[in-house]
Image 1 (cartoon, helix red, strand yellow):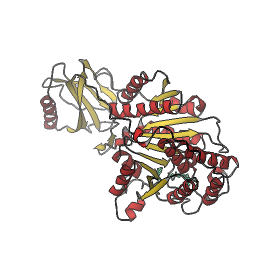
Image 2: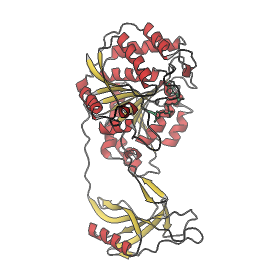
Image 3: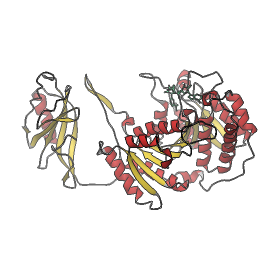
Image 4: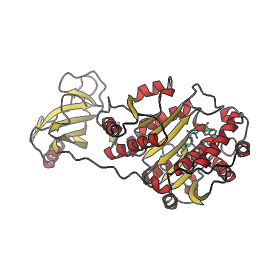
Length: 465
Ligand code: NAI
């Protein structure tokens, strides 16, 4: 027996988890479930949202199946899912969007694997108020994080016999962050010459998905676009009730349905266990237990094809009756075990970094300044020169307001002032800029160091980047 952690979750979680456990038992899958708690259930038991024992259980077993957990909006405990992903460095989120028999959809023949970066981007949660009126969140994209998820996407494409990987981004606007993701994608693509590759801007991708989804095979995306696009793909194949997902790390993996805890139908016997069951099937495939995965998938498909469905899919069956219909259609699993064993899963070492010649050549200082901003707008009268640094640019909400003509935009009390130098400078020069601005009563909030890379200035005053 292989031990797998089971987090039932809350809301409809316990009902759909029980259904999956029952189907796995009926299919004689040799899994021993190790029950663990998270979210509301853990808090009600006096613990944290994700108790250390739960993380230990997942680490020990290397695998978990997780039911949905409620996240309070605008307060309360942190999202359990985000906490599990970041604590276990589950760097890739994999969701399959495939049309299923008898699930009514606008499109036929959709079969898209969405591979989403799972820990970085705006989800790092580094957010601060800069002034009483301005909140800022950092979008962090790293070379290693991008390498890990993009390599995983290519490896999966090869392993699953798929043909094409498309990188989804917004590098035309987020030139450095999404630009880095796309640069890494192109590097990795060059290593997989047997796989067709392309890239697409995220807004166009959404439009193409709702007009010609059949054109896509595997999508790889940074976290935020991945979050949105994977739900979009779920909608295309029949909604959240049938969308499975897996979170893959270097040493463990957690599989869960895409939908939430559905408090509106919890405890009423109406929940559809399909998405969690499909997540369980995805887990069996990941374990290499292809025979069991296929047997359960076939039983599920023939149940749906016989129009045996829960209410969310237009049927009349309760969770229990639907579960029993699946069990009634189970055929004995042909023992097919793929060569991907548990040990093989740990194939992704921490990716390498690169080193470049970085030279400090400037600083962006973000200041709170609320002079006259409305009638005839004034700009903060910051010094044009401080030590070896010269004022190069000022912007407000990302739009350049100096030098050049003042654009007709709404100004807020948060300016970026950029100082650059064509000489070698030190961090002490940067500190002197802050001291000088402070002595002139400019309230600086945060700074960003500007570097030139391999003698090429990465930043200039030429555009409002
Ligand atoms: P939700 O996915 O729970 O529900 C949206 C709608 O879909 C509801 O009408 C619900 O009844 C229906 N629905 C969802 N799953 C269903 C199923 N298996 N069978 C039949 N109908 C189903 O989304 P909502 O209401 O936005 O979120 C509720 C809670 O779940 C929130 O606290 C949210 O933070 C949490 N959540 C948890 C997730 C997780 O643990 N993986 C993922 C998404 C949300």
